[in-house]
Image: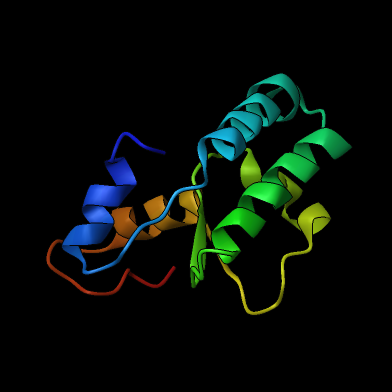
Length: 109
């Protein structure tokens, strides 16, 4: 999260990016590699991701990027508030890949 891949690209689009605190980043990392990558959708993993999202909500974010392919697998268990926009990084990559060079919108499929 802190390496800048998303941050720099989003800043170029005029967006301000915030990341969860170090404790939450570590807990999400552990949840991904210790649980979700093993198809173990544990309460611990769900709690870690939910707490990280809550940390971001406390920073008044408008959207949360689920920046790992495993994170969307537990979205239903998290039950985020309805006003929170969750962005699936896979969907975002696919939309970008389908966008013709220079176009503002992706191709319809």
